[in-house]
Length: 161
Image 1 (cartoon, one colour):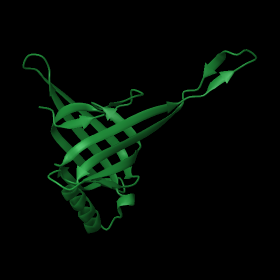
Image 2 (cartoon, one colour):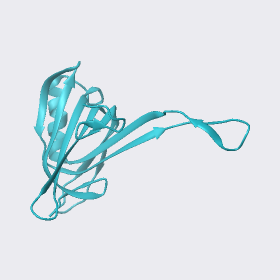
Image 3 (cartoon, one colour):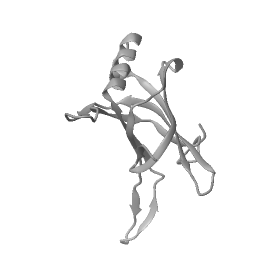
């Protein structure tokens, strides 16, 4: 049974790992994170069309890439996230993360479909809490400004991780 939504598609996760990057060096890690309910990401290529004297475009720019991502985590993990940042002496807005998400799914037969999505240069864009009384845990949404997104080590332009 799939347990987490990725861009509204259910997946079972093998791992969800985050790694703190400080001044370009990997000094510490959050390790494998539990309590992930959802994550979303988007890539937008902003291109500009050129027009001559006709109404039809005569060319288009290569464009600029814009990346966004967000995760929804349980309150218990959010407290760990903030405590770890405080331990390192870094404000949440200044933390730069690499986030690796390894998703598995079952294909027809017994074959396992395994893929990793990597967000690089992630910085917290803001925080949003939602919750309710009852058995469901309170969730914290953490949107990120993302510098690049790689799918199994390759980005949308063909660059390798």
